[in-house]
Image 1 (cartoon, rainbow, N blue to C red):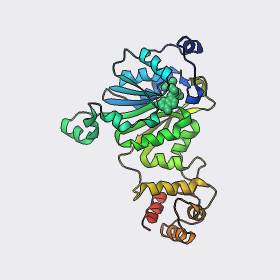
Image 2: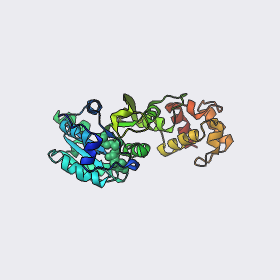
Image 3: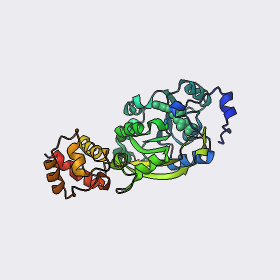
Image 4: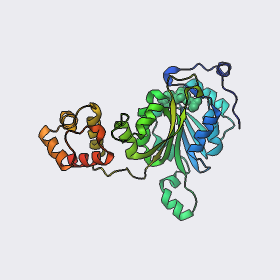
Length: 301
Ligand code: SAM
């Protein structure tokens, strides 16, 4: 169904005052909204979690394709409006909450279809039907992009895909390779748990009001198991953080000075040698595999 044209007048008529502090930039380009739904590749077996439904434009399109949409919006005024706008969509549940405070596993597991999700493979095999999957599809509020991604990855066992609009630079960091300026802790976090892809670039004039940055839509396909084998995940991410805390430092210096790790320079040099990684290299040159090797050797100490 085609959407009404969203203009400043439309917002005014509906009593909406835009809150910049909540990252409210509404997507008004119908072509891009359709593209996002296409990328999410939804079917009537899919449960969708939408973060920040705003004025419900994406929500409507998701509801038309998916079995169920759980739309989580923090702004009380928008929630009131959404309940009105979406009242004819029986498969949409609007939840007023801060996404970062919601336990997503609990939210989803109370749904009657959950057992199919939990035993995805088994159910497929036993019944021969397509299993339900949970996908996150959202135009994210940019002021909390990284905390949201971390929050979602903590609930990764219930998710198959995270299709989200992010600031262009953040998308580049997610897919970046070693030895590039965009490569950093976010690249490793995202690539460890998912296969990320930048799908479309979105200019700022696709939004009302226009943000000060360009955007892109990323599709993070959640891996069945992490990309590399790591003995102690917490330690692995501590090593990653230490290596990038001061990007220009050599690994020898960055790791031996990291308070989180408590390793002497001598120990760091021994470990780097065992890992076959030159001590003068910088963190930004290390691949996911090399970080895993390094942190597994530190874990064995
Ligand atoms: N989905 C709408 C669209 O595409 O036009 C709105 C997207 S807008 C970029 C971000 C939305 O996230 C806003 O509606 C905002 O109120 C909401 N939001 C901001 N912080 C939030 C939070 N912590 N939890 C849930 N929603 C939040």
